[in-house]
Image (cartoon, rainbow, N blue to C red; front, side):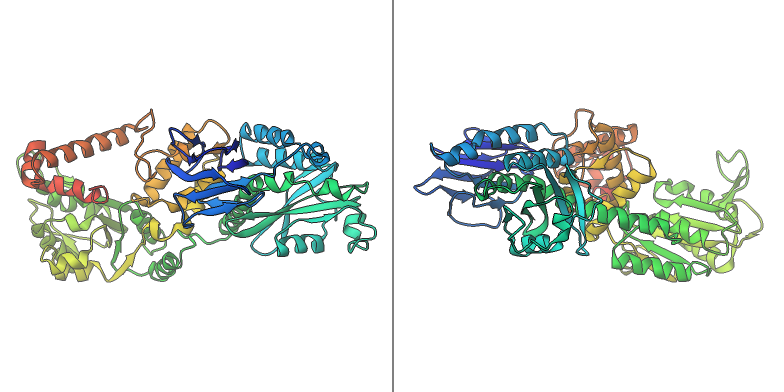
Length: 568
C-alpha cells in the first residue's frame, strides 16, 4: 500500500511493502525533512487491509491498523494511507499521478501561502471546477478568505450554512447540482455562480480551523466530486490556515495595543505582568524606593526608566550603575565621588553618581553585589539625604529617588546574613517581581511581532517558527529572544524566518550556526563561559582554585557563574 507522509516542510509518497522506519534521521528507513526531532517517529509494515503503524513518539501508544484515507498525527508527522487504484474506470478519473504532481510542486513551494495556492489550484482542477476559496475561522467565529482563485473574495458569495455543516460534521459536503438540493434557495451560492459546489474541512491539532470550497457554474457528476485528492491535500493547507488565524489575531491585538495611548514599558498578555504594570503606574509619581527583582534579561532597567519618566523627577537625570561590574575598591568613589589626592591615583576630583543624579533618579542595578562595608555607607546616604565624597571635609545635600534591581532574591540574602536588613527595608519600600519569559509564553510571539514591525524588517515568522518559539525556555529571557530573532532575521534567506535560522542558547539544539556568535560581544561571552567550564572541570569544581587558574578574583567568578547558572 502507498502511504502519504507529511511534515511541516516536506511531503512524500512511499510504497510500504516491508517493515520501514520513518523519521528525521533513520539510516535504513525514510528520512523526512522538516520534522522537529531528528530521530524515528514510526515504524510501518503492510497488512491485508492497509498498513500497521507502531509509534515511537507522541502520546499514541501501541500498534494501530490504518486503512485507506485514515489520517493519523504523530507530533508534527501526518500519516495518510492512500486508496488502492486498480485498472478500473475510477483509476482513470482519479489518477495517483495527479496527487504526486501536486506534492512535487508543494515540496518546492517557498512558504505556506504558496502551498495553499498550489493545493487550491489542484483541488479545483481535480474536481473539474473553475473557482474556489480557502476559508479560515478565527477565534470569534468569523469566516475569512485566506486564498482564492476564479472568484471575487469580496463578493457576498459566502454560504454560512454550507460552512457550518462542513465544520460541524468535520467531513466533506458534496453538492453536484445546487438545484434540487437542500441549498437550492441559497442565494449566496447561486448569486455568485456556485451551481455545483463541494467543501472539505481543514483539521489541525484536533480543531476545525477552516475549509476548502470549490465549485463551478456547471453542475457536475457526483462521481467526479467524490475525488479523494482534496481530502489528501487538505492537511498541507490546514497547518498554514491555523497559523494564519493566529497571526492575524496577533497582528490585530498588537496593532490594537500600539494604537492605544497606553505607554506601558512592556507589551504583554500575561496577567501577572499586567498586575505589576498597573501597580507601577499607580506608584510611579511617588518618591518611594523601589526594588525590581527578576532574572537576567527580563527588562528590569526598562521598567526602572519608565518609572523615572512617570515620576516627579522626570526632568532630572536617570543615572544607572551596575554594582556588580565595579571593582570593590572603586565602588565608594564611583557612588559617592572623591576629592583630588584622596587616595593614590586620585589626580582630580570626581563627581559621584548620587550627585550626578541630584533632582532625578539613581538606578542601582545588581544591588545585591554591594559589599557589606559599602552597604552601611549607602544606608547612611539614604537616611541623611547627603553624601560625603571620599577625602571631602563636608557632605553634599542631595535629592534623589533610588530605584534598584537584582536577579537574586534579596530577602533570602538578608536571611543568609549577606545583605543588611535595615538597608533592605530602605531600598524595598515597594517590590516588583518581573516574571521570566518561560512563565508567560503568550508574550513570545507578541514580542517578536513588535520587534519586526518597529524595526521595519520585511520578513515574517514561518508557521513552524510560530509553533516552536513559545515552547522554548529562553533562559536569557527577552534579551535572548530578541538577540536570537535579530540574528535569525539576518540569517534567513527568504521572506520567512524558519526554525533553523534560530541558533545558539535557547534554541533547543546543540548545533551552532557556521557563523558562530554573530557579534563580538557574543563571541567574547561564549569564549569566557567555555574557559570557565574548563577551569571548573580541571579543578574538580573547586571555585577558589578555578578563579586562581583563570586569574580572576572569586567575586568576579561567582558573578559569571550566577549568569551561567541555567547552563551548569
